[in-house]
Amino acid sequence: MGFERIPTSRVWFIAAAALLIFFAIFTAIFSTGVLLYPNLYIEQWLLHRPLTSLDCVFAEWKFLGKVGASVLFTLVLGVACLLLGYRRRVLLFLCVLLLLGVAVEYIGKQVYPQVIPVNVQFGLDSLACPQMSHQPRSIKVMTALGMWWAAPPARSKRINNEHFSATAPLIFDENASVVNGYPSGHALRWCFIALVACWLIWRHMKYHFLRILLMAIALAIAFGGGFAQFYIGVHLSTDLIAGYLLGASLACCAIGILLVDETKRKKLVPEDQRAEKTTLDVSGP
Image 1 (cartoon, rainbow, N blue to C red):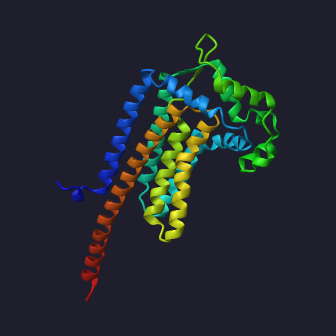
Image 2: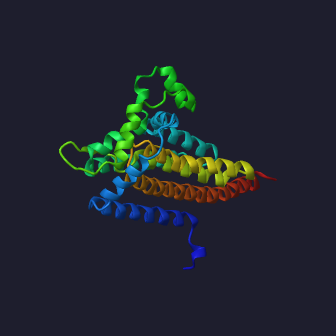
Image 3: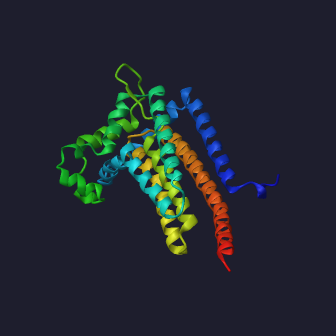
């Protein structure tokens, strides 16, 4: 069978399966521990960056990637699909795919704990704008709205901790931190929701300039939402890669389902029209 005869929906399902296989292979490699030191070296490289007020904005935005907020965004995405003419079952499929991702995330975080030397961990803690914890709610709201100038600057102690951790030797002892962040739920959910939204924009937006603009924004959200959590030290690079692979796999599956729904709707329309024409012929003179 030629490639031109393969239904487009099947291509997306194949892409979803391929990404899922890559996720499984990456997880198998990760479970051996061979990525531990490269992972920590990447984190130490990250610790050379300056601490800025933008870190506080990213720290406040992490709540948008939580499960509850993601369910809300998925429902909004499903409603958009309904308004575009897709059938109601599409909303159910989107929610099921999101919950499958949450289930895999939960299992992964229980099965694959990661050990981080304490002299690196307290440097990573400095990246997530800890000075915001004692700020009033008004400051937190302003920062969450992107007003980075409202966020308090990093304290000198935090800056010193970051500089020390950036070059500290990797010592694994009884004080080492055990973190459960594999895979990154933020990367998974942002990638899933935003990639599906990007495809819907490409499929249905008529105005070329607006389509390109909205697709660029959706792609930035898809990959930037998870990267922001890596940037502030909440997730490791391996967490991020695994979340991207799984989220992209779920998004490809969702797009395949949307295409199948489109095909079925196109088949139903001619049948309805033929039935209407037959009714008119029977009732006519």
